[in-house]
Amino acid sequence: MIRKAVTALILAPLTVAAVAFAVANRQTIVVSFDPFDRAHPAFAVTLPLFALLLAVLVAGVVIGGVAAWIRQSKWRRAARLAQAQARELNAELDNLKQQIGRAEPRQGMAPRYAPRLTIPPSAA
Image 1 (spheres, rainbow, N blue to C red):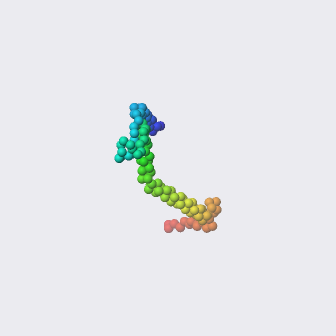
Image 2: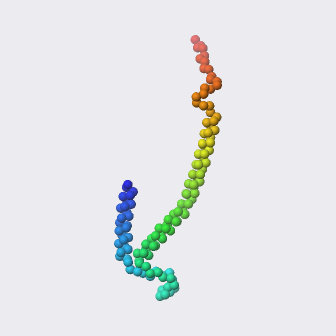
Image 3: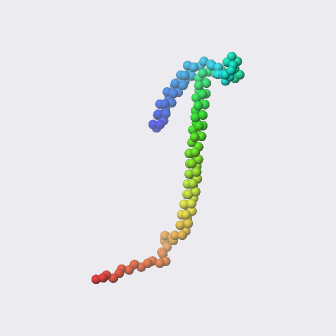
């Protein structure tokens, strides 16, 4: 509940700021990828400034997410190996419990030999 409230308190102002930025920066710009000819670029795109900044923001989030995913791969691998080992150990434990269950006598059956307890005579 608190997490949702904090998220709403953070996202609401960011959304308002992003919309205000987009409305204030509607003018079109030319994005050129040709550093040698500014007058006649080989590849140029005309788009609104807010669209360019939004595309750069999305690309940054995607690149950051991929980098974090790659960096955490060793932990995911370790978790997979630990989970596989836990499954193997649980299977071995179940097998050993079944073997012990077959080796022990049943609860309702009396033992064949019950040792007798004797009280030694008193030394008086």
